[in-house]
Length: 222
Image (cartoon, rainbow, N blue to C red; front, top):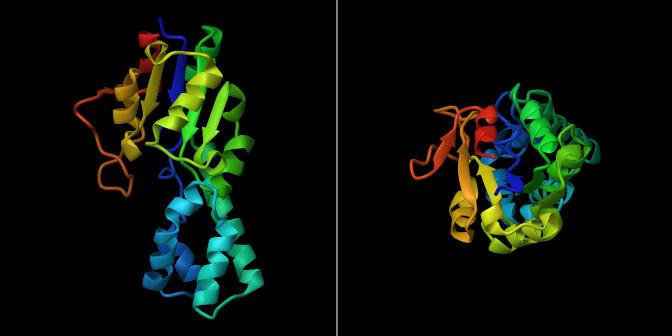
């Protein structure tokens, strides 16, 4: 019997690709830093940004200092633009997301969230319209570990008070999240309703996992 569903956030419950994006090369342009110079540090710091070692502001400050271009007002402007862009994705949900989460609550199925995220994203997740649906929230930035580390799954299941075989995991398939969930004994599904071929989305269809084309399809497996 399924007692809980654990979701990934990005490209599963929300997508960053249904609204204007604001990623590394775009940030570099606004900071007047050569893209290659910017991306070298930006990418090198990705893990530290993901597990809560550094904030967005700290990384951008470091990059600007490295390039002798620090400007406090410009830093503030870019941070605000990044937060605004990341927040926009919560305004363009798949039309079935809220209904699907609401139905899970009606059926007394617990809902968990495990998400790899940065400082600005952790704040926006907690402020989002989706946050009240979750019974357990485990964000890499707050936990100090990230998927595919099994420990973050164990922490979430402990909070939900479920065993792996009582739990479903739904994600887009990035960060080897589905492989680990399956190894732990969860019933796993790849969410593909946001998937767009030819974009910068990190995951592609994985034939070895059952795929959900629409959020509502999940409900028939409860």
